[in-house]
Amino acid sequence: MTGTIIDPTRAQRTVESRNVVSPTLTTLEGKRIGLLENTKRNAAAILDSVGKALDASEHVGTLVPFTKVGFALPLPDDLLAEIERSCDAVVIGVGDCGSCSASAIADGIALEARGIPTAVICTDAFVTTSRAMAALQGRDAYPFLLTEHPIANLTDADIQGRSTELASLVRRRLTEPEKGTAA
Image 1: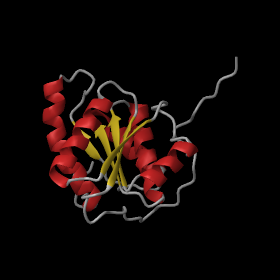
Image 2: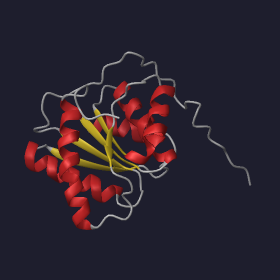
Image 3: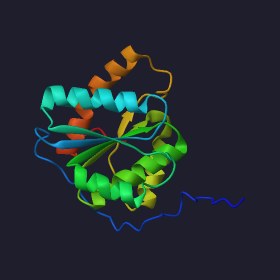
Image 4: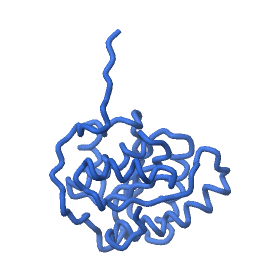
């Protein structure tokens, strides 16, 4: 059996993005918002709840769910292209380990390089990993959103409460990226 070892310090894609300002939307109303979950426990539930909160407050057009099966791997090119065709903005989450946080940041940067505003949610335990990947991708100041670690053990009530706060941060990140709460 042959395997492949992925070195997270070596970019799978070349992204020339130093001094780049994140793309923004003027409003989320009527927009197609992608919810890209990474199969980590409670990630889909949090993104679903955030999406519903955004729809209730911002009247988004469509919530478009996506699943990234390899949480520590770069977005496959076909999924990247599908998201680009299907979405006006994307929420990615939840980075709650070192490899999935780094990967989520790399995915957000790759989507923004294609002009898609992106809000990446990571847990506060992995700020260093997230910042390191942003720097490796040429976006030292890439803004990402933080939530308290861990998320895997949250109850439905915890998810609902956390999602209300996150939805507000996501809205600001997608419409005012340099002013949103960033790590």
